[in-house]
Image (cartoon, rainbow, N blue to C red; front, side, top):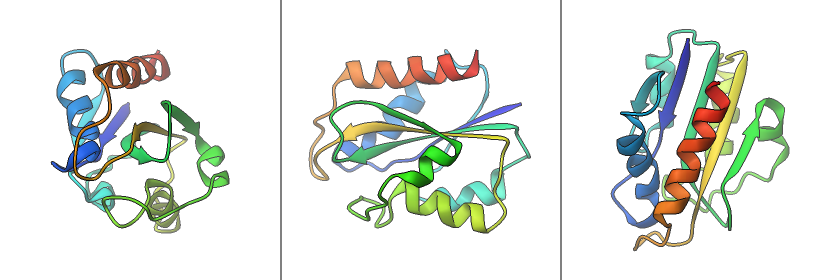
Length: 136
């Protein structure tokens, strides 16, 4: 079984996670959850899926990123994020709390503004295609 988790809020580029979730619903064959800004909610919702994909806006990027397993922990974890903690920092904490699927993926959608939407529809589409590629 696969789980795709979308993180985001209604503020600016942080909306990318929810936008991606809404558009992926009819296309992705996996259990999907939108957790708002609380990535730690995954601990209560996780049902031991073997593959987990986390999708979130990622500040400071120019392009979609895809990190898998230990690659996630090899990048700098900065808290310049709408949730006050970066997805990388949160995933490190989740791992310490026992969250350890066989495959863990992080898809970052480029974000530049907390106040307005700057990401393109193309970026959302590319994120969905990356999810579909991972799930094949």
